[in-house]
Image (tube, rainbow, N blue to C red; front, side, top):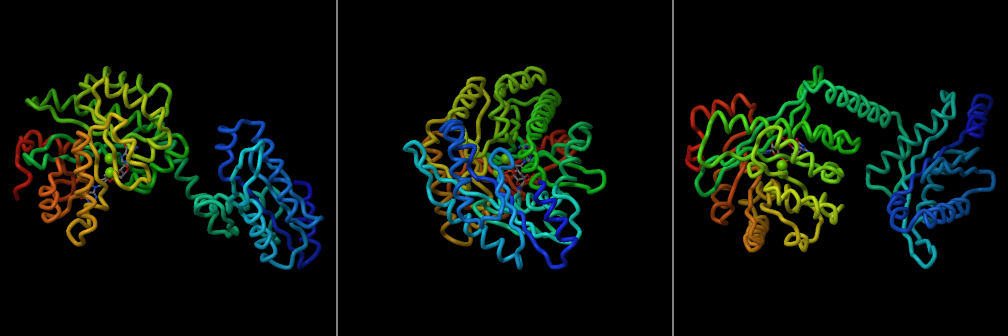
Length: 424
Ligand code: C2E
Ligand code: MG
Ligand code: MG
């Protein structure tokens, strides 16, 4: 920090004096540390520092900033290209494997570069900018570098603003609402249940789509509290509808479950507790999880899914076909239904490929004793194809859009659940 401060002072005295700061974060250090242990983790850090030094000039400074972060100060350069060349060289030397106690370890780094400018006053400021650029490099796919520009900062502060707003919303718990989208049996045409979908009504910005805040909520861990609220609200709502509109085949409620929720140590107890408190029968609850989530924590997911299934809660795989998982997990987990991702359904009619993919998924699911729900049915042609392929359930704008609870209530009061939605 002192040397960066000195360099800043120098830019003020010497007109065309330029320097650059590189902020480097290792991409998979935690995996190495967790799997090979801290001793090897430390050895890796030392080996990396040697490689970093090997690509720098003698006057340049490399420092360990903390954890798996390094910073580099390159003084007295003609232009940004010099810093970019250094980043290129770092990428190259870090791409070679490290040999640690007979283990071959691969790692790489995301690098942010900030070039000096006259208005930097403190070392912390240029480091912060290099950090913002590093963050951008990471989100653009890691093992790369990005040069800071002011627009990144605007992006980052927007994100921070959203994060603060989300924390507030979570505290007040008045800005979140659930919408409910009907799920239709493609055999009887009747509504069998609803999927609960969260909506965030921001007092100034209006409606914010879950696609825009769920990823942020997952990254910051807020999804755990949000998810608990969603589960409670959805179970309570469905229990009330059961009481108000009794029927021989009670409607079910599908709730999206995030990766962070499944890995909570007491997730099973929490679900059980919410079911008890709301009075909803476990067999009316379906939890939707994505496949990538399962693959990330296979052991843990297996345990939790089995516990929940024993309780009589159904487990569904959401957005099936979009993850990069191996299919072998399917018969090892107690999964009841595969939800075919909307992207396959959208093009089912126009080209043969997606039709064959959907056919394969349906066959696979049925052979494994699972059922299939198609997401995002929008046209009568898509519906006809899916029915011909013997897809079991469907959901989409063709039938009904996600609705407010009051609208659902009107639908139930008019006994529209026994209507045949396959006919128009
Ligand atoms: P998802 O679970 O796959 O939900 C289906 C999404 O497709 C919903 O978007 C729904 O409104 C939309 N959709 C349904 N039918 C059609 C259709 O015919 N055409 C088109 N174009 N879209 C259709 P939504 O509500 O914006 O939710 C997006 C995603 O956000 C969800 O995808 C889910 O992954 C996530 N999400 C929503 N609510 C929650 C929640 O409470 N918790 C968690 N963890 N994630 C949630
Ligand atoms: Mg879903
Ligand atoms: Mg989905």
